Image (cartoon, rainbow, N blue to C red; front, side, top):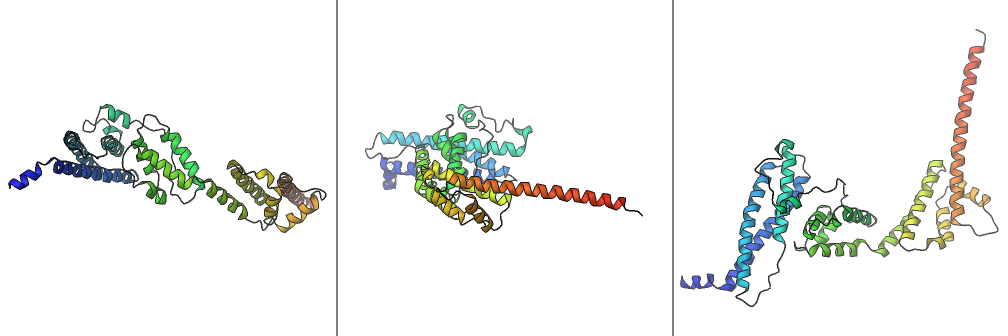
Length: 331
């Protein structure tokens, strides 16, 4: 009995126990975060479960503060201190406030001032501040081209918000990631410094210039061929090619020197009638330019539109004359 008492009073044992208790709190907080994210996606919110989670986190937060204080006092007595201070308290307050907002929204405006969930602490006021009403698309890592659009939107709404702590930004970042992109960062510890680590990991994986350039070149090579030359098909053809070349140019590729290569690729996608018309129309004494090629295709699309309008107009006039002739015929 005395041996057990001696062990329990040993500073190293007490420190190990406190770290384990803090680890349990961290696990509880991670599960609460996941639960809050799931409830945000639900049409019918489980209000009772949210209330229980809030109460549990509030009680655990009090215990966590006590454990952390005891650990700090113990670290002054022993020399092997290597416990990494984290930002669990800040994230816990943020998670509680997020669940309160979900609960209040589910209960309706008439319950928003309920004294049960009213909190006037500075932490709550800062963390429940409404973000701009702007939808951020989810990103799953499947299409590298969409990454820049996603990240630009995220940084504009959340990443650049100086009122949010890094750990709060990490919470939102994980919320808007799915699939492989989420797996890349979800193993990071819940600390402020992990936000920059998450951005670095994502940028290294998806903001890769070589992959992006290769992707756009492949899209150019695989641009949809035209089986029948119509105004709509020809305009879409030019629009797709211009967009891909513009993207490549934005990635530092000197597409202004690619004229003959691009024309050769695109000529194989044109319908046979348009190809023959292009060879007949172009200047045979000089190398063609991509700008002239695009102008030819756009001019051909315009001619199709004008001929369609002319045919429709002629058809209308013929119908009118036919109706008039029928009425003019003797009974």
